[in-house]
Image (cartoon, rainbow, N blue to C red; front, side, top):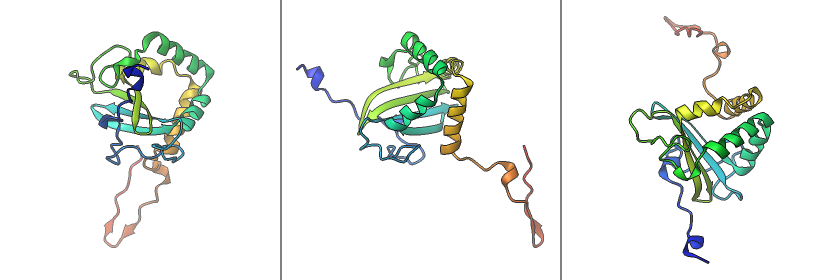
Length: 182
């Protein structure tokens, strides 16, 4: 056995920590399973817009696999072909896995970083810049987009729809503000 075979994977880097909780991800976003102890590992993904993390999640391998099974065969085939032909997995979190644009380059404000982890270790990671991410979005079918929308709706509750808010009422002399529909 060589020294390379004995080398342990690196720890999960701070870039893949949960921004919202300011600590490592502890649970699967979809099912709540404890991640550090999950057999088969987990995936962490974080999306940045204008340099700010706007979405982050961690999926145990079971939930990641289940969600991928819901994707259309057309999307899976296109994404697989793109990955095989265009993606270089060895660039890690610092350069786009497609075009090699540096994450720290001026103007690099939109990108996604993803890490595949097991226990407390990072097995591999990728970064995709916004421009290349837009290309990938072109490969996604309507069925796959619906699967993704359901995942977001189920796991990232935002403000309630405007028409579900209670009607404002007057209280004493000061009326409550009226919320206009957008």
